[in-house]
Length: 149
Image (cartoon, rainbow, N blue to C red; front, side, top):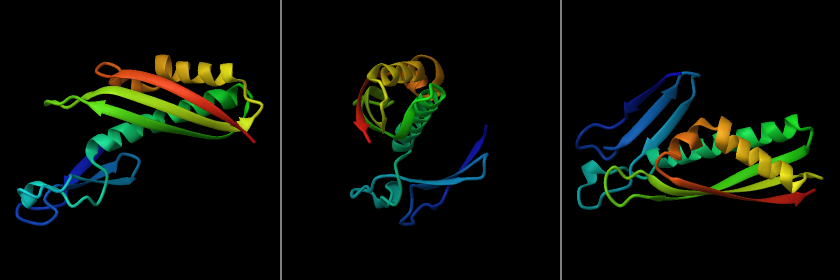
């Protein structure tokens, strides 16, 4: 796996902290920093997610992928899945994630709560590389709800 991240701004320009990542699979992802009123050349323009937001989003995508796949392999009638991640970071550098809560909303027909609970546990204990890595610095908690269709 590879990724190339390129700075899109030059010193003294308005987009001083913008970056574009091109993934090995050929996709592009923009990232930007927060505006810095005190020193505009050190801040971003708020045109894209922050890099740490993309880490959180990637973790959500990784675990939601697992949960859907595990439920489908169990022949459950899953029709939708979303996960809302709420995170806290350390106050000092490096400002790692210290707490992450993931709330899953699984939509489907006749899905037993035990199956969703098992899928989430399997993702976090065995399959989701991103959440397992983040679990080295952050306390990760989960919850879920099932919406019947």
